[in-house]
Length: 266
Image 1: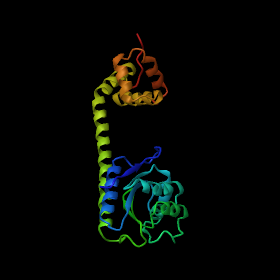
Image 2: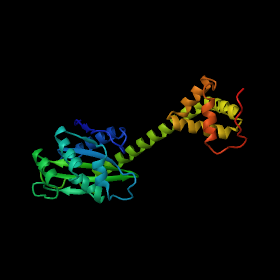
Image 3: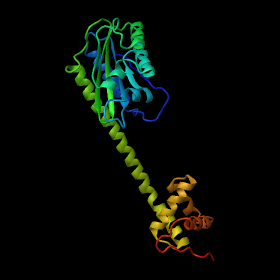
């Protein structure tokens, strides 16, 4: 099995989750294995959140952290130069949504800096295919040492592999999102009893209803930059002692809620 190398520049917002990288590596390896005239392959994943079409996708490619896999280390600079300059077959297919084919890079003048790096690596031909699902665009590039068309951009095993791999990556991203939501829900459920107790303390201090007490706790959480569950736990742990003045002060700066009437301290 060909070796693969994954590139990961400095983290930045909008990254594709790490779960995509094993799928990209498998896609590149399988594409190289099923093309006898191919000397190697590379795959990239680019987030397209907020883009209705492909316009602006090349800029998104250069702005986002690079998620890619290549079957040979010598192919890594070919991806890097495209990411750094916005020039090459990957930015081209991201911008147009159509395959980019170069049957002989020796005479192809579309991407000078990519072309120079490819010829240094001994690459003479390449075909890059795009696959989009929802807010994700995956590209698959196969390279050849000899001139000529490597794959059929519309049909064949390579196109099928890319289509299946893209669907797998999207499913993985969705599963991670759902797991994160489940974890957040579990945390909220575990924190509910202590939040209810803290609301009870606020209700006792102010003589207000539960909704008003909860709203005030949220205000305290935001102003102190503490999680609501942590604030509630501290309030319950101290039984409200030392917090009465702050509760009354915040209550006085908010619109009065139903039955809200601060209790006089004994």
